[in-house]
Image 1 (cartoon, rainbow, N blue to C red):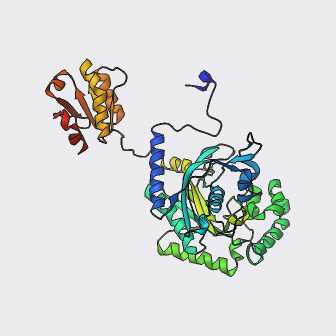
Image 2 (tube, rainbow, N blue to C red):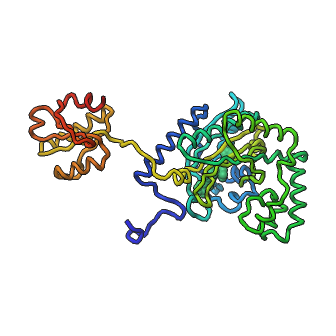
Image 3 (cartoon, helix red, strand yellow):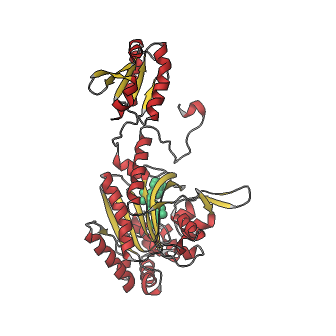
Length: 419
Ligand code: HAM
C-alpha cells in the first residue's frame, strides 16, 4: 500500500525487510552464528535499551555517537534510557553485573541485533541497523586480537565478500604513549588551526585524535601531513602491535597498515581495525572493532581488558547483492475435487510432521492456478490428488523441474519425498 493510502510509513532511516530479502538476511545471520561459534564465542542477549550513562560514559562524551546520535528518552519512572547505539558498552555492563569476569577467562560472547543511531540516512546508513559482533574479555595477549580479526576475516571470506582490512594501533592513554603523541598532535593542529574546518578547531582541546575522522576537505588536507600515532607508541604497545601482525601473517590474513585510522568511539586502546568493501560508496565500512582495555573501569568495574568487533549486516547485504536461497518447501499438494480438497490440509500436515516442507492451495484455485502457485512456492514436487488417485490410494507426483511424473502410494509419500 502506498503511504498516502494509510498515512503511515516506516520512520525515516528505518526499513521493512520483506521476502525474499528477509530470508537471505536470516541465512547470513545463521552463517555468522555458526562461524563465530567455531571459535568458541557464545551468544549473549542484552536489552535493546540501557541506562543512558552506560553509553554516555562507555562510548564517551566526545564521540559523535553520544553527542549527536543517541535515541534518549525518559520513561514513566523518570529514568533516562537510551536505545543501544552499539553493543560493546552493553556487553561489558552485562559481564560486570553478572560477574562473568570472575569466572573462566577470556569471556567470549557473540551478539546479533538491532542498534539505533540518529544519523543522516543515506545508502548503507540507517537509523536502525543490524550488527553481528563478538567481544572477548579478560585477556590482553595479542593473540586474542589476532583471533578476533580471524573470526571476522573467515566470516567475510566464507560469504565470498572481498574486503580490505585496515589495521592500526592507537596506543594506550598514558603519558609515555598516546599522551606524548597528543601533545605533538595538538602542537601541529595549533600551528595549522587557520586551515582547519571550524568544527574541527573545537576538537583540538577535547579530542584531537578525532580530527583524523573529519569529512571536511580542508581538515583532510591538514591531516595528511600530521604526525601519526604509530611513531609515538610506547615499547609495550609497539610490541603488542608487532605480535598481532606476525600472528596475522602466520595465517595468511592480509591487512593494510593505516596510521590515520582512529575509529569514532572513545573507548579504544591499542588495536583499531576496520573492514572496507570495494564498491559501496561513502558507507564502505562493513565492520570495525578494536581493543578497549579501559572500558570496564569507566563503567565502574575493575580493570578487565577487552577486544571485539561489530559487522554491519545492512552494508554486508548491500555488498553481497542477490544471494542464492534454498526453497523452504519440497512439496505442494495440488487437490482436485471436493474430497481431495478436504484431504489437502491433512496430507500437508502429515508431510510437515515428517519434516518435509509442504504448502497447499489456500485460495480456492483451479488446477492451473494451483500448479502456478506450486512453482511460486519453490517446491520441487507437485503432489497431485484427484478422485482417481484417492480411489487408488495414490498421488501423482510431478517433478516440477523435469516435468516427469509417477504414481506413488499415499502411505509411502514421506519415504519417497524425504529420501
Ligand atoms: P562501529 O564502527 O560504530 O563500531 O560500527 C560497526 C559497524 O556497524 C560499521 O562498520 C558499519 O558496518 C555498521 N554501522 C554503524 N553505523 C551504521 C548505520 N548507521 N547504518 C548501517 N550500518 C552501520 C561499533 O559499533 C563497535 N561497538 C564495534 C566494536 C565491538 N568495537 C569493539 N567491539
